[in-house]
Structure formats: structure tokens, C-alpha cells
Length: 274
DNA sequence: CTCCTATCCTGCGAGC
DNA sequence: TGCTCGCAGGATAGGA
Image (cartoon, rainbow, N blue to C red; front, side, top):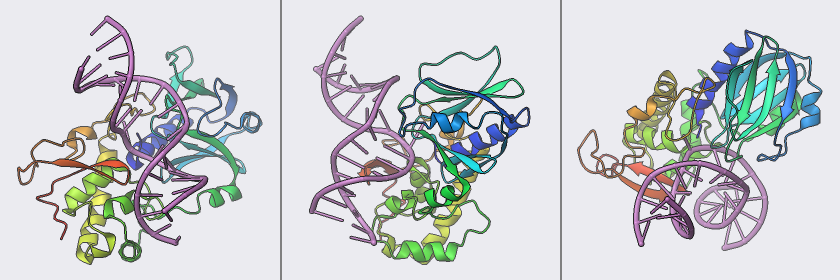
């Protein structure tokens, strides 16, 4: 479910939560076989310590606790839900409950269990996240070198855009959206995309991700922020999930194709291959 | 190397 | 109403 905007919102929710109490009081594990087995013992050893800050890198959440980092990924259906003591209702796929000082807790709920929670040293973290490409919303993003990277690739541009080695944070929804906004066919080979088109693409990637954050992310199916609220950006999607509907720009029909193992939405009339 | 496919898992909607 | 089938926002191993 979650791409960069959704994970960023969760990160901000948790950041705010930590203002009301950031000490780890207890962990409760209900189920540990997520994508990876949860390191229960290691996490238990963090009891009494403070989560000094939370960060997002790509689609990962990072909780810093002294010299260690709890790394969490939401997979397709993961949620870190904030609950206050005495409130909140148990859900079927609640796997981990982190009780914080200040009377609130974080509950990791994940029906499909593609998400995970890992424990790393700060050194181990850079190793673990070393194959990741640049952050699209970083002010240090070098568009020129990004264009150079992409120009060397032979895959369709949409596939490359979703590959976290090249650029992080863009998943299936925002890849289709950014390509439509930049008027580039998802099928176009990276090496054939012109420099001018790449300029447009980086601009649209940034714009669509920022707009999605502004609108609380996209709730297509299950995404909820940490306060269990749905996003609103699904109402502003121009091509994703709109196959058979009219293109907002040229009024021809939006189609879907299977590309890189994912459903891809585009307007063949606006997004020409050559 | 790069690219492509299958896979992990549950829930839901479509179609019969 | 109830069954089966296919598909869903991600990441990665293994094969070509």
C-alpha cells in the first residue's frame, strides 16, 4: 500500500506522538512471523530507553534508540497505529504493541504480513540500506546525474522508476501518475527518453509526491495513517485505477497494461512512445 | 551485469 | 448465498 507519501505521513504522525512520551515501556508480541521474524529479545532489551528520533528513508521507517535503529517497512498492508490507554479496539492482524511513556502506544498491524520490524546497529543500517537510490524530495537531489543513470538503462521507464536502486519512494501508483503528468509513455525505453522529458519527469515526480503528502496520501484499499484516517489523494489521481475512463486532458480512453509485473495505467494518446 | 518471473500472505470483489 | 478465481500499493531471490 504505502509509497513515499504514505510512509512520510506515518513518520510525521509518529514524530508527533513521541512528543507526548518517547520512552519504551514494554513490548507485546502476538505474532512474529512477518516477512522476517521479529527480533523479540533484542527489542525487549530496549525497554527503558528513549526513541530519540524517527526518520524515513525510501519507504522505510527508522526509529533511533541510542546506538541502535529499529527498521520497519509497511509492505503492502502494514500500519503503525497510535492508541491511547483505555481506548482503541483490537484488530485481527495486530502483531506488535509498543507501549510508550506518556500513556500511548504504537500497534503494528499488517494483514498480509509483507511488512517487517528489524533491529540494527547504526553501522548495520547503512549496510542494510546501501543499494538504495536518491531521495526524490531531498533538496540535494541531483537531477542531472539521475538523468544520466536512467539514460543508461534498457528497461521501460516505468519499470526503472519503480526500481528503488535508481530512485526511491515511487511505487506503482505514483509511477503511473508522474509519467502521465510528464506525458511520457510508461513503455518507452529509458535510453530513448529525451533529456527534456527527464527534466519534466523529475519535476512531476516531486510535484505528485508532494501533492500526495499534502492530501494525506492515497487510500486505494487499506492505507490509513497512524490515526486510522484515510488519505484523500486517491480522488486526485489522473490515471491510476481509471482504465476505461476518459483522459482528463484529451478525452480519449485510459488503458491498463501489465508491465514489470504490475498493472500500469496510461493514456496512449497523450503519452506517445516516440 | 540486466531483466523477468515467481513468491511471500490475507482480503475482497467479480463471476458463476 | 456461497464458492472459486484473480488481483492488490513491495521487495527480493533465482534463472535466463
